[in-house]
Length: 377
Image 1 (cartoon, rainbow, N blue to C red):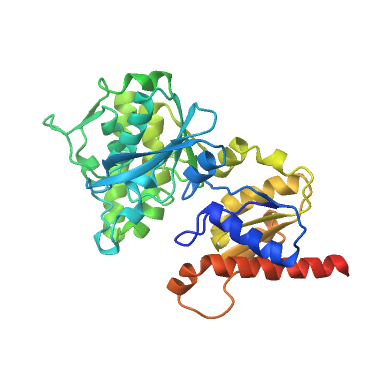
Image 2 (tube, rainbow, N blue to C red; image 1 turned 90 degrees about the vertical axis):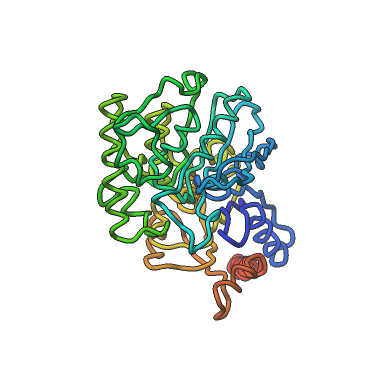
């Protein structure tokens, strides 16, 4: 069988989750053969999945965090020696900000741009940028600034960082953009296809989880709409309504406008890079999982992306979940045959996260014992 979970956010990396599932399998069916292929969909764990699973190399760089305080951000190069992998949350992620200090009006993707610059300076020309977990809503302007773009107000002065300042944007000077961008291929790995603006845009859908109340959401949406107009007028690139432009607080739009990037399905990028379909050859079952399965999982998040590929080869799929949210049964129509919640008794969320390995391993064992019983009967 193939064991292909993504990370259980806050609890386990994808690799550790796969090992926990395997441990349960070994207790239930000791002689079972299993291939461990942890995956990701552009969010947490993308770096590990793409670099760790291909015997690549991890680097650590000191860059600006979302509010410009320095952070140590990990990035890597895949085993092909040619593809750099940048997980934007490492430099510009929500987990880098305290709960009471979130500020989507000021948060910047500058540190993500610094990671891109370093990869380009080291000679890499194919870059995959994981887009999940952002603290930002600046349309990728901070990223572009780190790569040499200048965002100017009516008086010709540079704008301060953050999405709110974009409402005062008058012009963009791209003459100083990193020259290597002309020859580079940048691919944004995302699990969302939101446009930049509007009721389904970056601010409206993801602003609240970053600390934006209703008034701030409106302010940021207007600022991004203005930003899109200036980009269209000045650069001739229309990013406002492109699917995926709203990923990571509009970083998708920034990559499109300033780096010639494109947004693609994160889980498909990861599965293709790992040659996932070939790993399914000869398998009899696929086990996947994530921290929470709910109605949003069907929008090409990792478990459903895995299930889609498994079903193309006629394989049954079990998903193990840290918790189940509203509408989780929708995954049954998208290739997942059974869902098992790993929590075995009432407990605080904090405790369940701390015990994720134990709970996941135990749920795996229960699932495989039932499976073995059905096979024997």
